[in-house]
Length: 405
Ligand code: PMP
View 1 (cartoon, rainbow, N blue to C red):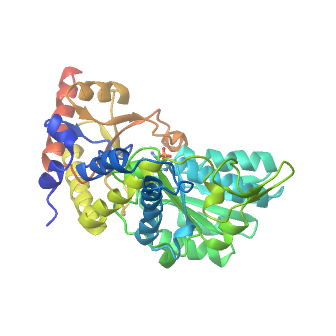
View 2: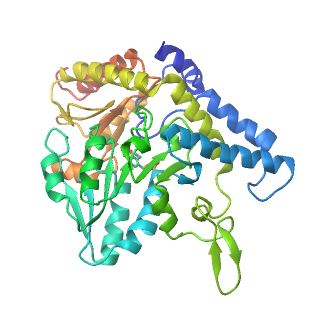
View 3: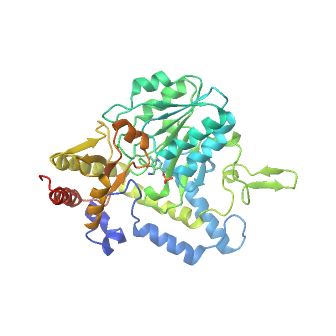
């Protein structure tokens, strides 16, 4: 039985601050005891560097680190654990694919395709490799309700496109893009696809084989795991042919002054001492999510989304951004005459944590011709009272600002 009140008990932050209304999980999620306990246990009982040592602690640290690789492969239904590359997060994973896959393959006149709702981290890396190679960055527009323009997408697919990089869920609009339809459309034109699953990994069971996706990235910290961890999944054929772009220890087979032979995947992409404690801990975050069940999480988010939209809709002067039919637990809005930052500041003083600004998606703001929105994002520990407290808080702000509430 999925009970957010019970789930809340598993997060120490709510024990320390029982009245905290945390509505910023799209930025990062809070951490449950199971994750925190494993991190402490790692440092207390298993801490050593990985791969090189032959003593007991080193073997245990390596087993934990590599264990998360196996766990991640099962989590995503990847064919083999070596197709899982540990990164510091979604941004890092996208940069790796931009530098090691796109850059060497792009020629002048080629195209890379993204959507107009991408987070800057799924925009700038592609823009920069396009600039370096005199290639073109093409952009799939979205409709005023926040849904991807599927007709435009189909029109933009052509053999000049060397990669389509698309977010599964928009961190600003909440739109859930139909990646299961889009990936085959791209493949029909020979275009590989990268999916940014930063926002969807919590609420959607991702099966990379069923999706037949070429690359998929996500961050551990949005999955109740530690910051500084992330996963890049890639098809074996691509990962094998991609050259590494970070050099150093751990990623080599043989080194002389004249040349280096690189280790096979995944090691060739993991130079230097990795975030061992973080990666070791990430496995427990995956356990936590699978124990709750992504379907149950998605249902819970839908419930809060609908309650939130319904309660906030009656506030005078509210304008929602992103009203796609298929939408996750994210609400973006403005209140007429009140700057989003003022709103977030006043609510922050009441321990209601929401975010204001462009949410690293300036092109979305440009589309709607606004400087920013207020964003509310839900997670497993949010309860209906959080929505009611948010509504009350917003009405109070309206009162303070001298507006009808
Ligand atoms: N893509 C999306 C859709 C996101 O929501 C985020 C985080 N807000 C990122 C990419 C970047 O993730 P990170 O900062 O963890 O690298």
